[in-house]
Length: 101
Image 1 (tube, rainbow, N blue to C red):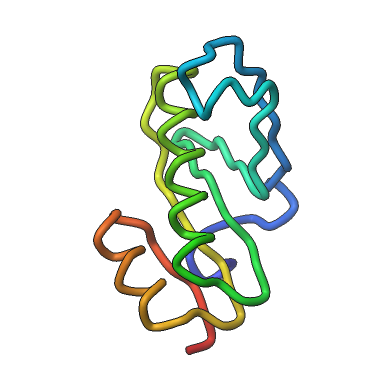
Image 2: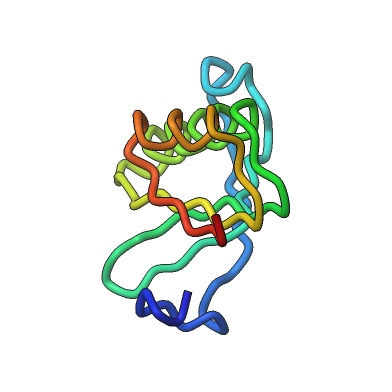
């Protein structure tokens, strides 16, 4: 992350309230593993192992963020391991992936 200009100590966990029953089936609180706002907004999904289902769930929560907050953040996935299908899906969604792979 540091190599990408991200100060790790500035990343925080984020939870936002959702009162719209049409967003994520009315899930009351939507959480994000990492959130950084330093001029740009970045949402992060941080996992040891990333698969396609986790990418899809992250994307669903990212879309909810856009609807609730009215802004479109950059999307990053940070994972030690990532499946090839998940990597392809992240690319389709425009999600930046940081992994050792």
